[in-house]
Image 1 (cartoon, rainbow, N blue to C red):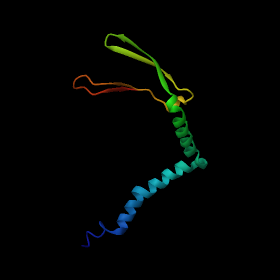
Image 2: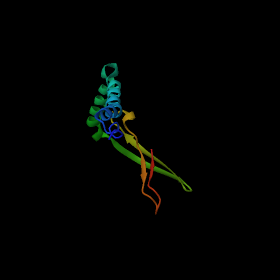
Image 3: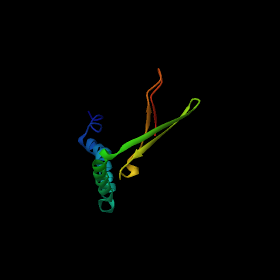
Image 4: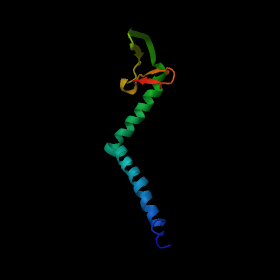
Length: 105
């Protein structure tokens, strides 16, 4: 019993929980709250902008240029006022036979 008590004690459990959960949560909070919550404000503005303008986003002409086994894809993207840093276009290709699918940003 004496050898098991330190391993299964409430003090050890509280210390471990504090180190693994409370301290990281407090650090994350301080980062979010820094500079009077500028990061949080940016997140809210980003979310509102996406909700307002996402439905206006559209794709235009797709062009494919091939040279042997190489293919280059170009697509027009009309953001209609949406900040370009909010968007990333990726090419997704289904796998050929047993290969993995292909994603290219």
